[in-house]
Image 1 (cartoon, rainbow, N blue to C red):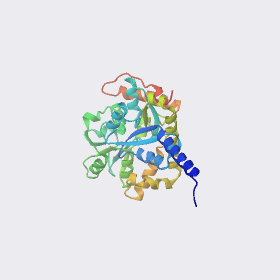
Image 2: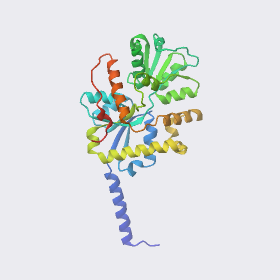
Image 3: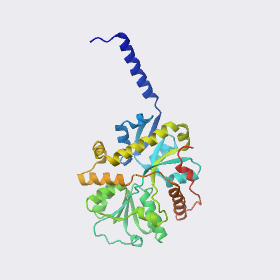
Length: 320
């Protein structure tokens, strides 16, 4: 079958137009930790081409640490990172204008060996505590805050060891640490192997006065970027929500992510899926924002050097 010259020209024009359109999509650059669970979400978004469907081109940049991600955002090397609103709120109090899109209400896990007899925060005095990722770990911030509220300064009265999550998991198994504060997905792995969650960090937040379940982790971006790229940011928000809906409702979608999850067996694989789904957040409402303001004040009051700064609620309003 012969194709006329006119048809060839038409096809070439359409192909050129499509490629030109694709190249013109605004980029949204997101920095993520190499082993972070956000990789699952963003990879599914790319697998389904939700970025192009919703009018932007997602660029995933993997970094080695949370500090590196935060530096990339402040230096404009990327547009978005995943971090907690406590950090973003502190930055805003110092003059930054950051905004928060909920990512997960999962905070982390505090894990001990089966049969561990520690019952109260006071009993952590003198214990070996492993903290995954370093002093910026959200679970560690919460545990220190709750302990300080109970009269215990864990930084001074316990033996704290910072390190990579897999190494600290092994340290717990060898008895080199008594308590492990780790990221939720490493905690889920340990629980699937028979280790115990010692306490609920969500429960600690409630005890400290934040009764509503405010998602601690979110996509952090600068207000200037959000306002100047409102269409792309709105598209990003919609693509993320569609991704969360997919992963919450359809088990088959997880098959394409299993290589990223590095689940050693089916028990751990299912535990990771369950943990992700349990952490799926809803939109932040006014009651949650009020709780966040009070919680921010409490965290500041219990810090070594209180600033007296208040949380600006506009953090949770992405586009002006």
